Length: 471
Image (cartoon, rainbow, N blue to C red; front, side):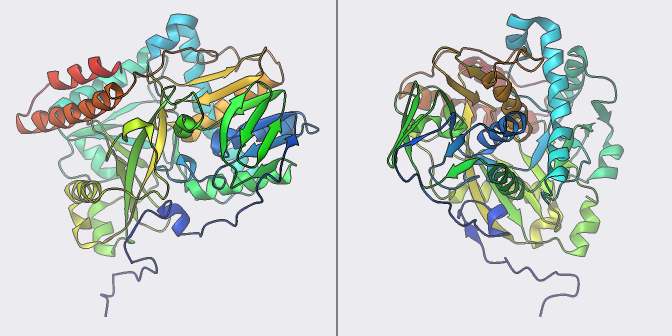
């Protein structure tokens, strides 16, 4: 018999993979038909994740008569769009200096403002389309658990203010102020940003796919695109011909012929608990829907779900040799153990609460770690991605921007500094495998050294890792 304060969890059996816990809690969707043969469209989108779906959504809203076809190897939302940590945040991957090098300081400020607005735009669409995705905008909390992390936290607040953030956009928190929001063992302080909402990502992407389909977009699943050329996407089911072909594959970009080195597919893993007992909830005190991150080099990300679980993620095996990607979302045993240990270390009260699911997903990383949106007006070939794990909101802004580019509109979005960026490709193997593996080994070493030696500043080991990877 369970204790009176222990909720009965219908999903208590441990599962590794099966796409993600987010789908396990609602069920996998029924497959849509595959491409029946050669086909014509005005716009062909390869990839039915959030980037492709948002692009189609805004294109149809602006020009309803467009014939839009989306091709998807698995099902809409199979990739990172349905596996991520559920952070609808204004965080944008990449170097502000890289963006500013082409568009100046004001261009970067405009991009950051557009990201903050995109958080509310996504929420507005969920309301307008009746998408119930457990959305709650209670902000983001980043915790510092060592002196070095605390120093980086204050540096982050100052850095954001240098790039146009107001005092209310990033607020430093004392240890007591951290505890008032969520009690993390060993917390020294943190910061809060209001520009973030918690979501259930699978509910969001499935709801958006239905809204797009209802608007007249054709989504064809179980169709593997192997090559993209000017005017056509070539698949195992036939060829789709269209004057505009958009590659919206993010971490799966390497699956397209000739594009294995364009964006590196980086893996990230997650675990989720059973619903917290009342005793654990009281000890942790996480009453709101703030999402939680930390200031470590091998960082973590977490949310308290709508049904009072803790879902926590971080890096497992960061990269598979040859830019290979997973199929079912299963992650390694040592990764599950490491994330479980981190869960228990940050939240000792969860030691008595079982882990019920582990999974992983793949995200796209350009060589300079900086996102891009692009459309060649001559060839009609376009793409968006390289979000480096910060894509839940970024996909919305990218989709709106791609739509404006397709419609040949000169708008504030098409003038943002991430539009039309070009970066060099990743190194051939085994160099890129060695580089990524070395980076995360060094980051883990840096985190350990900062904690064990109580360093007041960032370890030199982390700085070496940054130099190796160009972050």
